Length: 122
Image (tube, helix red, strand yellow):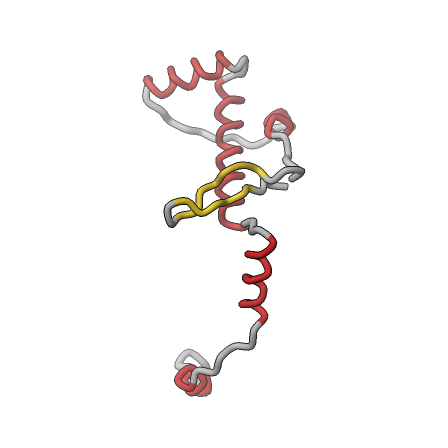
C-alpha cells in the first residue's frame, strides 16, 4: 500500500504535509532487498556518480541499493499523488455531495450525443 499524505491549503495551493497516521506503509528496504531478476541501466556524469556513491556510503548501502531505494520512493510518491487524496470529514461530505447530485441537463450535449458518430460504420 502506498503512503497516504495529508494535504492542507496554503496560499491558494495544496501542500503535502505528512503521512496519515496509521496508514500502512510498505517498507522500501523490503522491496529493495527482494530477489532481483530484472536490470535497470542508467548513465550519469562523473559528478553525479560520485555524489550518489558518497550518499550511499553515508547510509551504509551500495550505490545500486541507494539508487533503487530512491527510485522506488519517488515512484510510490508519484503514483500516490496521482491516485490518492485525503480530505477532512467535512470536505469529504461536500465532495461526495457534489458527486452524488443529479447531473444537470445540457441541451446541446444531448443533441450532440444523439447524432450518429462519424467513426461508426454506416
